[in-house]
Figure 1 (cartoon, helix red, strand yellow):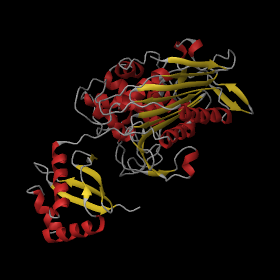
Figure 2 (cartoon, one colour; figure 1 turned 90 degrees about the vertical axis):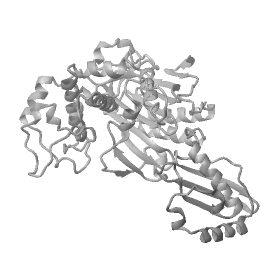
Figure 3 (cartoon, helix red, strand yellow; figure 1 turned 60 degrees about the vertical axis):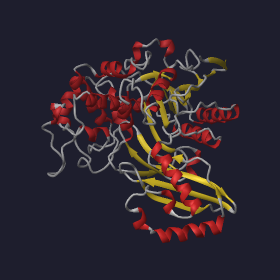
Figure 4 (cartoon, helix red, strand yellow; figure 1 turned 45 degrees about the vertical axis):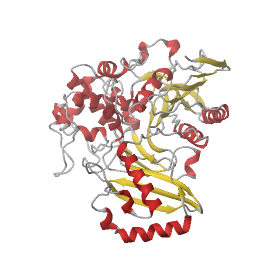
Length: 504
């Protein structure tokens, strides 16, 4: 149950109790000091970026644990932004499109490696840029490798394009920036084509299919693609900051390009989407009751092997290591030195800007929605994630230690205590004593005993997967760190053990 904390000076905040999404997900609360730092991050951003209104939220362990509004929905009525205020989320719509395409694939209604022209006949007579160009697959559209030019300024204004006009555009042919499947280049046109595929394959209009497949099952009852149909008193009107003043942007209606960026939603609704995506991690046994399978949701992180390097968004990026980023399916999948695996996406649109960041390994998501053209709140979202990191609030789900890994750990204990692999019995894969013979192992273990002495081996092993684990022992003259890796045999046997004194 959410409880209102405050609603003064156009600012509101709501905090909710967190419940674990699964048995292995810890329940977390965010201390007031950390929330204060996060509030300051967003307040500074809203002021510096000339944003009329903003809402941001933190989802943890399946719950919206914190949400706060700053500023106003519209400058005329000065209604304050609340968790129920509706914003256009621009390109954050692409993840909804991508997951719906994957669901149609699961239902055997389309194939990702099929040519896109199989489902969009208007593409069949296109002229490709080179004689050896491969024809565009559905997968290429999802991964932004179809060879189209980046089209943000133009694409955003195409949202209300009538379907008939889009069909004629496709029949006329599309110019290419390069041959397909050789490089990543972001394309709104590509996702508009995915929207057409959704319509043609499902047999229903794109917006209706998204609502039936995702929005209604997730309880996102305030969300949709027809912005004008929502009550005006709930809508955040979009503004452009131009010539040192705000100018009202026209509301773009729904049309052929809605699949690339037309969704309107609230913080309360969008948090349900974030919680649902995060619930796909970690993989596990048990019921799979979501509108789309957990394994399919995890495919959003799968890219086409065209990685790029970038600096982390926000103030912490200048001092952090560069990220390796790949566009998955409606999400950027990034390896970050501090945050681990991240899935993120921004949204820029006439009158609106948004950003979402998921930390699947920690069960946490952060998002922000603003009503200023291309507001781009990526910086404060990533800075907020780093504030949680520095506060020690990113706790990964615990991987359970299975029987095979536990048996192997007991063997490693015996090996060190007795000073010989022979103490473990028949637990080794065929490579183990070929890579280091019995006498070599005995000499290595004797040297470790001389250096660190007897060790307390009663500490538990930490599973890093079902077949790998790490451990640390306190010894008479220091500490010993170790890891073990089992082979893909039946039963799994030890293929490698590493032991080394801990270096200060």
